Length: 376
Ligand SMILES: *Cc1c(COP(=O)(O)O)cnc(C)c1O
Image (cartoon, helix red, strand yellow):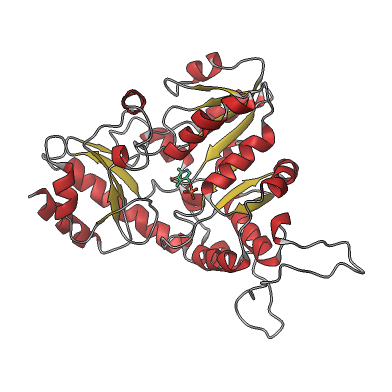
């Protein structure tokens, strides 16, 4: 696995000097800025106010991108990006196994805008190539995927796209910028729900897109009209969150590996989905393209009552969302993927007794003890 040397970037990159020599970037709350004697036109919805720029500078360095935009939610980043780049009559390919909110967006809104799409039945290169049409503009992937942590080969995706003039897009939320940098493998656009690991404390809703200057300019134009901007106070909190991204993720990675091994060895557990397990079908690819396997794992508790199991937990909180310092657990069938039909869930390999664990940074022995007592 590759070395990860992002700690200094997390702490320092992008920081703006305060005129009083304060250590932190000041918070610039203005929504009105002078315009005489300057070419600058600062305004929050133009995505250019100082605290947004500081945050983008840090995120762009972490993702090896030239530029980026910060939004008020992950879905604002995803929908604005896709609708900036797709026109009526265009076609887009989605990998198998997507975040539920993205699937909802596609099912509900794409037809109205005259955008056609293919959701792949599997993520093999031949299947991806066979789905390409003359009007295909984008191939969109999410690896590791939610909730079954399947892995897609990023180099393979970017090779397929580059030779055909297709834009490659990834939702990199589960890996976080600490564990995976898709631009290194030739992926064009990286999306994040910053609500998750980038925030890390379950208290901010935000999203981001990172890419080349040219691509960001295109997305920026539509972003102004859709208006999903983030205010200076939240940008400040996210800058603060990112300072500890490296230490948080190091601990998330470590704890998740220990828990995955423990669950995998437990006879009461039917199946464990975690890319750090040698038995995971995407393990080798994950080793090559990730710097850590992440803090998310999913397991199937077979015949055990999943509702009762969650009620039995004392430390791990049954709750929605993920990526916080605290461990949380949820049933994807009842939360993130509840709007999908039974058939679609089956296609995505999501069972009713599947639980998705967002492993926190607590003492790992305490987490094991909690799982053990809840299993009975
Ligand atoms: C949460 C999530 C999103 C959506 O982000 P919001 O901040 O909730 O809008 C998108 N993709 C993935 C993988 C997510 O986990």
